[in-house]
Image (cartoon, rainbow, N blue to C red; front, side, top):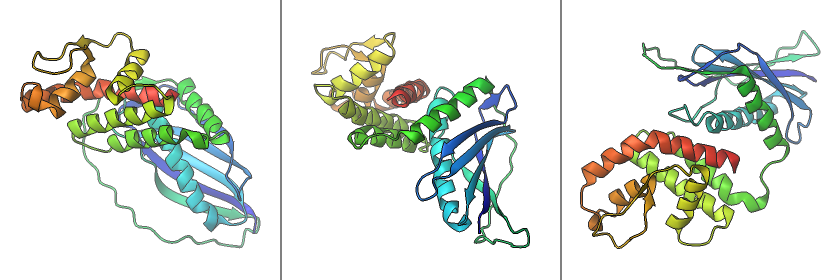
Length: 271
């Protein structure tokens, strides 16, 4: 029976406040075999965004999982767009779904789910984000959906997934090292010649030529200057020839992680 499927998702982004209240809506061609146009609407909420996906379909159960996948990709896209401000990856959680058929006397039931929600008081610092920026996120996302990465872009897809995985890791050192590895995978996509560290350095300096450069310690076999990010990484993972000061290296990485996370997010978003 044809009708309209609708699903609503919460996308928490606690450090963002949208200046314009929206809603921000875009039309996107859905995947096969549900090629009809989908409508995605983002609305600012008290803790981030509410996403509503509407799909014209005659098989609401089938599009349910497709809508979940679509919401997950929007959340990942938002993570890259807001990489300068978010501390963790944006996650889409479905809170309800419905199907309104052409026959108003027909009720469609979905498999039941139990959702547990906790409440806590949190002091947070928000950053204002313009509505035009959010509209730009949706517009850019629709372009990505219409033209997904080619098969030859496997390395950049992997790099982005590594970055998103890193944002779900609480430990700052682990997060930093995973992001560094994501940039190494991205370097393979760009085809930059040279050893892994050299390739990552070229990517970092191309994005931000003002990154401070640091000379390795005298006892290190490396003599060329390194970006502050590579220097911090090497001080930690090559402690055997760089001073054996893991506590100091960890402290340095913890201080650099927010800046490194934002820089790498911008690099991987642009591709």
